[in-house]
Amino acid sequence: MNRRSFLIAVLVLASLVPGGAAAADGSEPWTWPLPGRDVKEGFDKPASAYGPGHRGVDLAASAGDTVRAVAAGRVAFVGPVAGTPVVTIEHGRERSTYQPVSSRLKVGDAVSAGQAIGTLLGSPSHCAGPCLHLGRVVGEDYLDPLELLAGGRFRLIDPHGKPPAPPAGGNGSLDRPVGGPITSAFGMRVHPVTGVRKLHDGTDFGVTCGTPVHAAAAGTVVRRSRSGAYGKRIVVRHRPGLETSYNHLSRQSVSIGERVGRREVIGRSGNTGLSTGCHLHFMVIKNDRAVNPSKFL
Image (cartoon, rainbow, N blue to C red; front, side, top):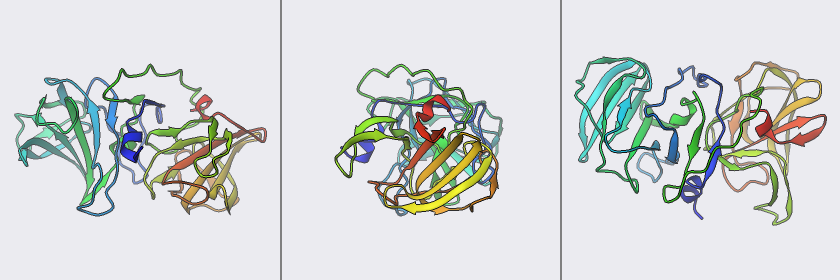
């Protein structure tokens, strides 16, 4: 199964910070452009400007749905691109793009967050059925829109099957350290590298290498290490008996003894240690024992 097929498996994603959270660069959170929050395909950043990848996210929708602006801004473009109607809105240094969307807006029009900007068309569409392709761009760089769409739960669904029911969420005492889909949950599994059936002692989030990793809560860095299994690792103690661990990092941005705030960037995701691809392996350690992170997110 390739990465893109895996990303559209029937997974359920927990919410990020309730009410939304700013990105590492200070970008404001986005509101959802559609009533539903089903993600048909996630973001897959291309390795080069013309390389393969998925330069945005596909959101499940129906033809005729009203599409709304994800944030306040000003219309920068309205018109066809390669035969597909596109709307682009500038939000300071960032831009959001929407396609295929029919709109009566004009370049220069000011819009507010949640304002209707057009109607979703059924075609042309690169999805199996109607969908909204939402993009996020800074300069010439494509970024993951799901990092800012943090205002509630969203589901990654199989477009050929019935969406699963979301499970009950955790107590919300910890924030999600990154966006992206859950690619491997806590529990018993066959290790993809060793082939041994054992406990998967954390939750894997599928994000590209270099994605900012945020502290799940305020605390003190008690470990900064590199091992054969976890790769580059940061461990933060939040209170006696409760720690979080961030593994397979490409970069460690904090030092032992350093105090970090909730949502502070402590490193970058990577592929170090026993890992088959870029992701974050996130652990919650309670009284020196790994427990299911979903109970805290």
